[in-house]
Length: 171
Image (cartoon, rainbow, N blue to C red; front, side, top):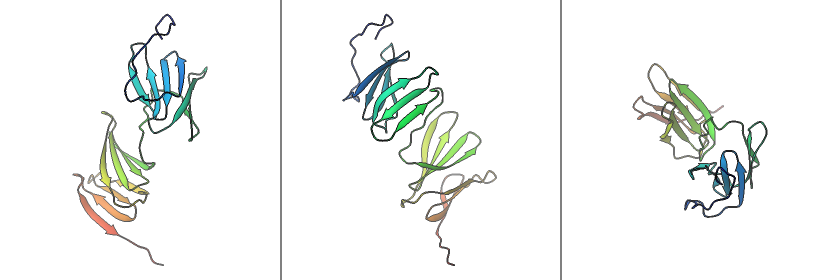
């Protein structure tokens, strides 16, 4: 849609092979598909949102909240797109902050580090179990990351594994 409100023809990216719904807001044209929602602005730039959700429709209310209906996961409410959503394949369990670095443990034995200044995310640890990392600590004096899932672990400041111990408590 151009600035006069007239529909115009445009080429969609190859990533969008199926469109199940289209919504027009002041921001542009929303294309909903099984791999999220794509916003097409007036310059025909595409931005992808919620790629892990099957989005069926988008609605923007009077308070500028966005409502994304999904086929099988309910409704996503987004009050403000100036906030950054970091989609993860695994469910986050614990979050710890150390200066400008955010550490995130997951339900499937992984730890990610996010640089809050650069918005980059990298995998620090991937365990071989499918257990959640329920305990996560960052030692500010040594720089070590201490965590446990089905094992007790310590990563050095250089992110090398110092300790990996199987533990059990017997009463």
